[in-house]
Amino acid sequence: MQPTQRPVLARLARANPTSVFLATLALVLVALFAPGPVGGLLLLALAAGLVYLLTVTWPVQAPQTRLIRLVMVTLLVAVALVKLF
Image (spheres, rainbow, N blue to C red):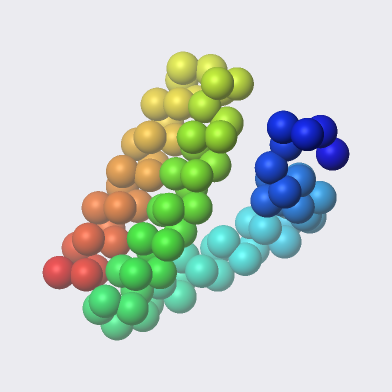
């Protein structure tokens, strides 16, 4: 591990991509079907994790990818706020 590499990112890099995808899908489905504030808080937690990854990977992403990621996080936060309120 490089001295500048964050431990969370190192663990995520070693994770099986299929497992990460399935776990994220399960979290989204549980959050969407969970009643009211519980689902909204789960979606906001997922959005916080995505914002963290977005800020860490921002310098190495193409402008098109940045735009798509920003739109997706914005939609996720919007759905979370609708579920909360």
